[in-house]
Length: 113
Image (cartoon, rainbow, N blue to C red; front, side):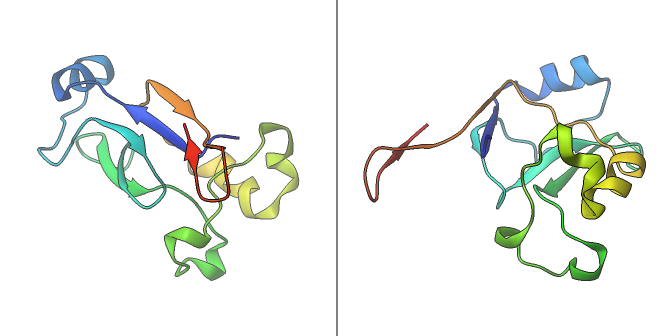
């Protein structure tokens, strides 16, 4: 599973591709991580582009720190997990990205993308 992604597109390219207004806070990034505020397209935003932290948690635990949230899920098991079932049906969004990757451990303290 992946734990990072990239969105290297210029603001104009994102605006054109997804027909959204891109806030000035948008910055292209090559190492998007769960601890970053990341661009997301939702139906709830008036411009269509908002910033959220990556991950989800049960409704009863939504005060969890970002590092403790679920950041990956397998499509084959989404309907089986109560935490994700309702979100799959009712809370979808589009995450603009042009690449994704997982870190590979090359030593005890060293990893490469």
